Image (tube, rainbow, N blue to C red; front, top):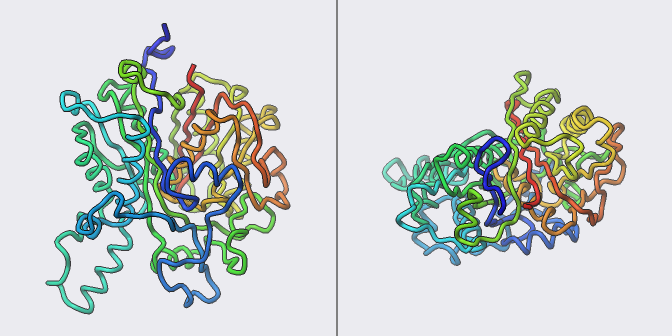
Length: 420
């Protein structure tokens, strides 16, 4: 009989459901197929007229196949921002994947922890114009509920009937990594039997693109959008914005076993640290401590890890610092690791990045194939480990680590292991 607790006596926690909405496709299978085939989801912006951004970024990783009417009535869709649409759709897919309906008698032990980095930016922009042009009395009564971050988990809980803990972490690009880690802790603590968790983002708007352009943070490779996200490449010039959602259903192993659930992977480690140095320039020490913390929490050594889905955003400074941190933490084992960045394919999904990439790790463990880092033609000096350039790599992966680092110097690492 398999132990349902770990070596420290904590409940073991497993992934039983996964749902994705990404620039590579709506649905887990569609996104996964695009990733392993190296098919980029980055294209010219269609959500607004970006032509006035003449020398700045005019492309992004949009979700172009999303059909809101599959999940919402027209009235429901109008009352929520696009990031909430993504979150609800991905949650619905995760619950379906898990074959789980929340039983009323156990609803108080099912939580929802879902975050976003920025929330309803599109709703804010549109309403600001309404206020300016038509006056205060034309503001929708749904303006606030449509944009605030915690309405993503709030709407999910209403839809599925989950009455347990319900809240949103907000930690920039580490948001959904932290959501996953905190969901893990809710189950370990004994507060929940199951938690719906992850993140969503939809900030491909004039203000979102304009703001990151003003920071000089994004690539301006307008002549070749699908070549623009190039983590660790010598010619990288910034990240590419993406949008979408990644939602997982976590359960205690005991709960999952009791209902005969299929299991994708086990979540075994969580680390969270701060650089405490600079809001946008990482120094690597916080990332290193974060990875060590996650491994210690998992009861694993660096040599146990087979694959790292890196933060790998395609920024000039951040990419190299992350590789230096990996080399420091993993020492001689670093040259045996496979490390890739799927942001090269779907862009940087900000608050949704961590959970989307944790799902990628779970699929990598299940399928024995690692998605590539595309556009990696000339690795920068020091980026000399296996970064899985251009093509997917078949490899037996028992343990995977997912890194998510955010503005403000916030860091998150999650460790997943094959369920055995």
